[in-house]
Image (cartoon, rainbow, N blue to C red):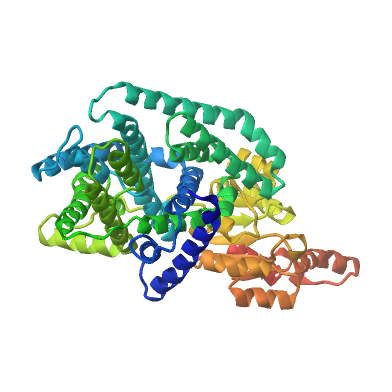
Length: 574
């Protein structure tokens, strides 16, 4: 790889992906399809504009590392473990069932399983893995990562990654199998996990506490931590992606994880674009002899997911909807499979180049299919459910698990824990202590977050000026959002900008903002606020009875029963 070709190659890849991606968008096609086509256009199969395909692959690998890091940051271990038996049964059983069926199928089709003719074994293993990059992006765009099927999907993907690591460790010995590589991989993974969590607990937490008031440093340290753990994983013989996942999970418990996720998402999306472009560049001319086998592989991937995941989830207590959507989410071939295929063909000589080409085509097809199937997963389930009804298997009943919210419900969100927000929390908890479990507060001061946590309130570290931060705070799940800080104290944003952004993020939530005057109040209401509170008017209402009493003027309207409209509005919103 010539380093002088790196920047021009990246520029060509990004420009082509942008143009073809826009065309796909205007034609209402999946953006991933556009990126794959862009890669095919500029790759060896097309115009050959890329001087060094290796340069784009290096950058795409960074995208995968960042993707796994962000998955780790967003991974709620408690939520995943809450899936309990369902995740354990489906997660560890799916790959074994798919691989076993695959070995039998591909052996029956004449593919070998041992030595330098291990195409059948490789196909079985590769078809058992699903694409983390594709699935997470599609579920994230659809805002379904935090549903029960989303959590189960993510958990199964993580377990698949563990299986993939074992396959990579065991791969050199396919011709002469031994147990040592597996034990080595297990030991290295356990050591990496232990080291990552211990270092984050006893060192990183103090580093984050000292830089919490400099949000840009929080992001820089987090990405540095990701690079360090990914590099350590590579040095230990594990995948860098596994290291990035450990890095993310080890700091996910910190209140800064939402902020880091929001800030690193644009960087991740940039690199992931290059990943899909590089995948398109690997597409070679399809030979007529491959067409039937590519169709068999694609069909096997889809059917094997429903043969393995669906019954396992049903037997472990999940409903038909959850089992169906989880199976559908995972019906594609993993990017890990391409790594396994490439090593098997070029380094170990276990499989032929034609097998690698077929896997690439099958992966491209299943990824595009998933773009549609995940987008329309719920209508597809309804059609599946109607078919079950016609066949006499019944319809969705009360026993089915239908989860659409993910996190425990926090119906009230407060943006900013300054004087207004603090006073509101104090008054709420003073009269209604049970409200602690229903509040979510977004603030950038770690000391405030400690106080909130001690009182059982969900406190999130975040910059209110960042729309991505607010999005990752899951504000779309709340019923009412309070913007408690006046414009003069906000940095990088204002109440009008917040209301406009919140209306996009949480279209069904009631928004209560802070206004300076009547004109500001009207602008906030027009932007989508349900109520605009003017603190100075509230102050005047409280002062009015004292002034009238001093002037010996009777005014029944100053009694609590005749509080001003702003006060009544606040009560109604709360």
